[in-house]
Image 1 (cartoon, rainbow, N blue to C red):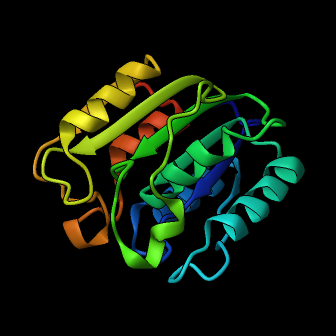
Image 2: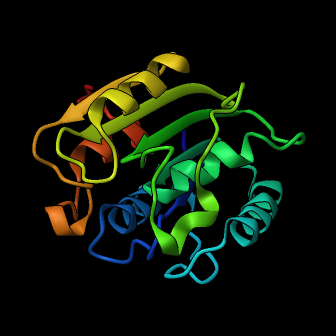
Length: 185
């Protein structure tokens, strides 16, 4: 990441407040004089795809990020955004703990089923999942990564890669996003 790069961090269902790794990442970017936007999306505990699409489209237009970091449901939101005609390409997209495209959960049902867009609107795509994520099978995530020629990383026994599975401060994602020398996938 170059200092002038802008990083947009999008949380999933329920938000990602501290000590979640996304909150820690936002803090780390700011501490390194980076430009970061980490908005709380509308009604995060009972999200609506259409409301989130409208809100994030406005954020994308105003903030114009170079890098986007998605966790959980934000990944599906990104895929829906890529169906829009006026999407602009970003440099890097990090998709962490992407839920299954056919998730069946009443509270978030407006997001599913989620089609794979033709274009992901990112020059580089990095998909990071756990081998025991309850929201997606590793094979489905790997097929999505292959579809977009994305780098694919599996972390052992990391659950949904959130606070509940021990992911507060997370050096791997910090190194990848900040572009530090020990950022190895």
